[in-house]
Length: 205
Image (cartoon, rainbow, N blue to C red; front, side):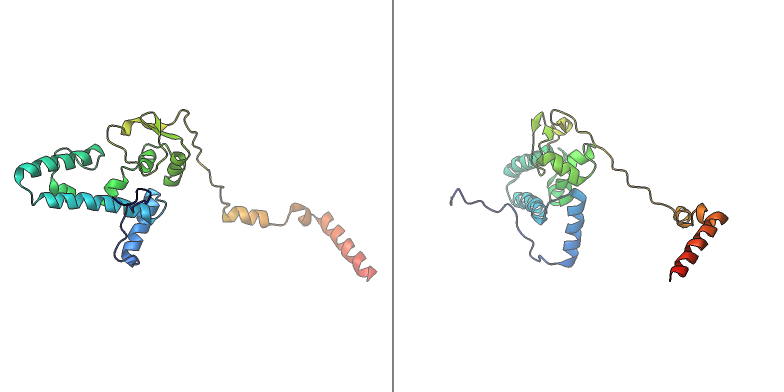
């Protein structure tokens, strides 16, 4: 069984860690779903990989045993909204990681307009501001079942979300008007006073 204190890795690293094309795809997913690091994405991919492996093993089983296990597998995936109840093994094998990321609590909070950005949704969850079924949940990667999705909301008091307004940029015309000399300098009396001051300074030299 091993040492119970030792935590096992819940993810597998890709074979080519520094593959440029894969890194670019992963970077976009991290930005889209507000993931903290690559490990969260690898954990989701590992979970799907295990589900697909189980589905492939079922293809070699006798029909009776296969039907029972297939029903259990598809039922578990249907409960978290990844598949429909009438799906088959082919649907399990064709699952993509985006489908699983859409079922994370962080994404559900954003889709329900409880937060403005993925980063803000994660912050609300980790700070204990989000509840599922009336219970506080502080794990952004929590997979929300279809039965609990409607109960996702704020914990106790609703949060006030303020949209930050960006300062209005001045047009080129407005900047030009501000840069123009003031009316006092264009006034003849002001010009005379300026000349007198200049002459006095030259006389002192």
